[in-house]
Length: 110
Image (cartoon, rainbow, N blue to C red; front, side, top):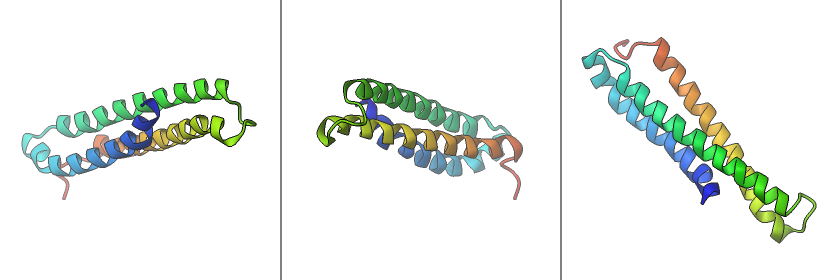
């Protein structure tokens, strides 16, 4: 379960945050606050970071059980956890990249 959160959940959080941010631009401009945009992206970022850390811990546990030189079947959980960790890190980086313009650009700019 810890592997799948980063493998599927983190990219889904990026897409959900992007969709929600687009939907919240008009209300954020009307309310004159960045709180809705920042809270959505911040929550997705927190989820992505936690999912990535869980996958990384799973990678370390699986690597201790089956080293990289092991045959294919015992090494499969370690490889899947490695892929999940990298996907989680890329998703976290994408969320940070989405959050930076929210700090710099007003939602009312046309």
